[in-house]
Length: 412
Ligand SMILES: Cc1cc2nc3c(=O)[nH]c(=O)nc-3n(C[C@H](O)[C@H](O)[C@H](O)COP(=O)(O)O)c2cc1C
Image (cartoon, rainbow, N blue to C red):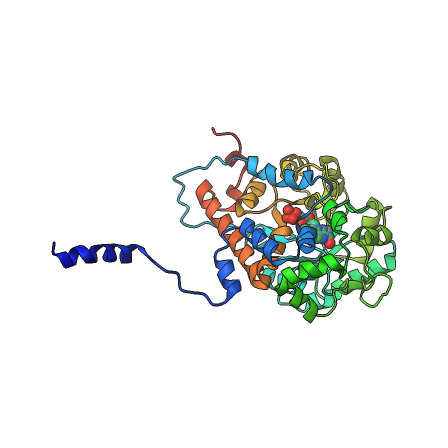
């Protein structure tokens, strides 16, 4: 080896191993490209959003036991992968409410979505539409039924909170029908509002009030603050124009809900909803086998096993633990949606193997929205889609029909 070769060798070796990523000048694209999971997007959202906004999304009731339990229950479930099954073609498609779904997933309702990004519900609906997934618009949305109805999203569901003013409920349901919504999802776990300690500590009000704390927080999160100031005020868009209820006066969400929603809600009200809506009806917030059986008996089309992401009753059961006993009790009489704690596609695979038809997500897409707007929601849905396909291949399931409980449990 010549002296020149000796000098060049370190350079050649270094050149063979060093690879610089092409610089991405678009900051959002750069951040999203490095977000490998929903957990990464949560961290990005935490950085981008003011503390009170992040806590409104991330927080849960009281000691946040139910929220933690939802996540922990998924982590506890071990898979028993089968091998040598030729998984060159994996088909994760299924059907829900009689229509095909590309993967067993839908986007659940979240109120006040514009707080994470000015496009709010419109961005989430469009991202759901691109992924071919249903999107559920909340009663407490900050974009109206008509605005969301006009977005390119084929399957839209409307989430109903039953207000004391039944006339208002009837009117919203009729507007959803005219705007092309396919199904109603009636939330039944919010007779009164759960106490969310993080919101209480921050004095969080909707719309966000501009106190000294908010001003300082806003200055530290300029991207969010500029978006907030440049756009129309955030209101409860479905009741816009009704001064008493549209959110134009700052209130705490708990005062608002306790004043407007009807705590006398009962099974009889579901019969009443059937008289004003002739499409599919789901109920969201079932947390026991006994209520799941009552829902099946009442002819409900799908039940969402849900504790509201741990935002209502703090000592509620972990949702995925309910799936198998409920599936056993109701059989094929009613479709089962598993809602709460989904952070990875493997969580969806586990829920389906236990007997769920599909899962819904809340915070996962809000973290994406907070981290990177509409592209952030696309990113989350892309991650979950890829996770589901990869996990199915790794457990040896070529279709959702092959996702059975024997793929889960203790090693055997
Ligand atoms: C910020 C936020 C707002 C929500 N707003 C509503 C709502 O308006 N109506 C409703 O039925 N559920 C609402 N939920 C509950 C979600 O639909 C869903 O049940 C919950 O987020 C599922 O848990 P996950 O966040 O772990 O996926 C909300 C959840 C969050 C995080």
